[in-house]
Image 1 (cartoon, rainbow, N blue to C red):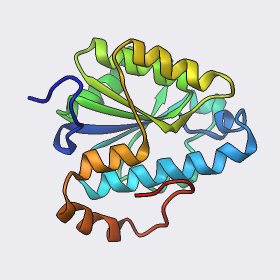
Image 2 (tube, rainbow, N blue to C red; image 1 turned 90 degrees about the vertical axis):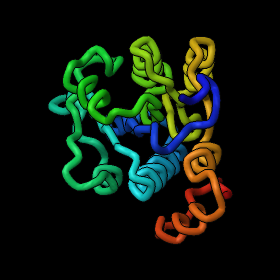
Image 3 (cartoon, rainbow, N blue to C red; image 1 turned 120 degrees about the vertical axis):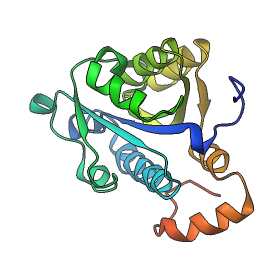
Length: 194
């Protein structure tokens, strides 16, 4: 059993990609959009290489459109993108069931929007008995609300970390790093150093 605030374990983790849709991306400053998608795509690829389950949502697909293709194309084959009709994903039975079905109790959240769907989902997952980590540089919301969302979650006990920290917590040793890094087969996202 892991400590509530100890390191994330890859065999106990699932990755939850929340609402990365053009509708929400278009609200961000232009210079933030591409790097956010690139970072999330890189995290999805790492999760796949480490056999970490990936759950994906898109909010009200009929109104707000699908997950952006750059991310949908990175999802493991056959991954369902859940049509999320609530802000906090634990309020929707099929998504809550999909997370429970992974058998993992550590949920790593990336996506949009930090102060609404990410925060509501993180707090709801914690209330359901999961440990939750939010990746600060792989989540976003229109300025100036990102920091407020991160602070709200931190006050609720959510672990706030970044892409580099997540990578090393999942990989954990030099042998795994040496195996995984070449298989990622894509450049590091802008601003990320390992």
